[in-house]
Image 1 (cartoon, rainbow, N blue to C red):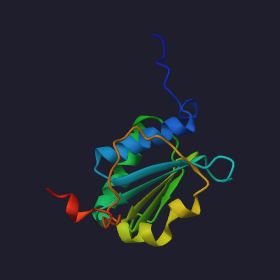
Image 2 (tube, one colour; image 1 turned 180 degrees about the vertical axis):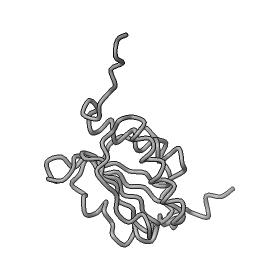
Image 3 (cartoon, helix red, strand yellow; image 1 turned 180 degrees about the horizontal axis):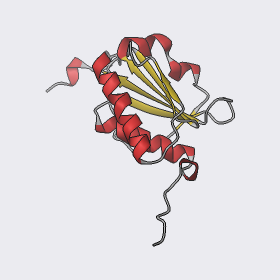
Image 4 (tube, helix red, strand yellow; image 1 turned 60 degrees about the vertical axis):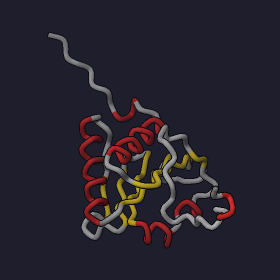
Length: 144
């Protein structure tokens, strides 16, 4: 009987791995999911993924789901920080680092600003509104 060849984590390019992670986060209703290609500006990882959780329990559920899916896809998992407090959960998938924040913490640390030189990746997801966005550009006179 022939042995079934399993796909290894190294067979998946970093941007494709990040898109998988974004889809997994979207499956569990994470908000404002972004991915930035930081190759050439980071010596630690190739892509960072950022997502917002509604609560601490939601952040933990998102992290659990990513961990479960990474295991089922044979994607290397190196570690996790912040799970217990769940305000900012960091997951290290080697060439993809995942940041799951509660909204206030995400705004405070502003990793999008820190990694502004990173190239936004097309996640393949529909745009989700930023819950922190200012809607002041709506013109009340445009209402019929």
